[in-house]
Length: 196
Ligand SMILES: [Zn+2]
Image 1 (cartoon, helix red, strand yellow):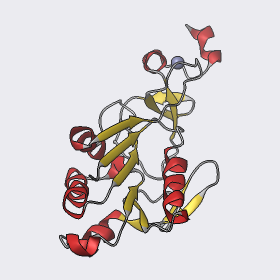
Image 2: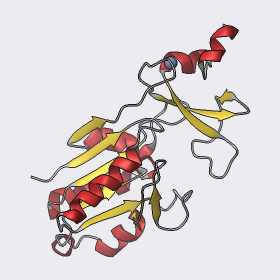
Image 3: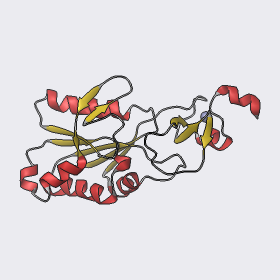
Image 4: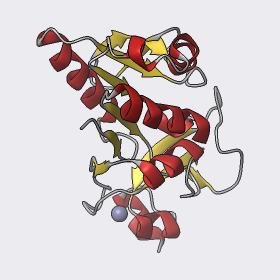
C-alpha cells in the first residue's frame, strides 16, 4: 500500500539533498518519479530545486501538477512516486490532494519540509502533514551546543527576530537552526555564553 511520508527537519538538516537523492534513486531504477515544489518558494529561481551542498535538479510546481491531474487518478498512475520539497509552504488543501493521490492512484508521496517557523509555530502544510501522513520521520541536525536543533531562528543583524510575518521573501533575514534552550536565551553561538 502506498504511503504519504513527511520527512521534516530544521534548516540545514539536508532535507533538500535527501529529496534530490531519493528522486535520483527512482530515476536510476528506471522509475517515473516526479520532483515538485510549491510556486511560492522561489528563492532558487524557476523550476529548480537546489541543495546547500550543490546538488540540484529541475522540478515542476505542485500547483501545475495538481491542475494537470485534477482527479484523473487513472492517468496519475503513470507516476511511480511523487517527491515534494519545501512542503511547509503547501496549503492544507494541497496536502489533502496529495493524500488523495496516495489513496486513489496508489502512488507514494514523499514530502520534505520544515516543521515550524521562526516563532516555533506550525506552517500550514507541515501541520496538515503531521495530522494525516502515514509515516513521519525526523531528519536531525545539531545546534552549536551539539544538542538537537529544533528551532529555525530568524536572524537580523546578529540577533534573533521574534516578531514578523511567517514567510518573508527577499528580506535581509537569514535563518539558523538551534536548540530550544538557546532559542529562548537568544544565544546563537558559543561566544554568546559570555553574555549570560
Ligand atoms: Zn543549543
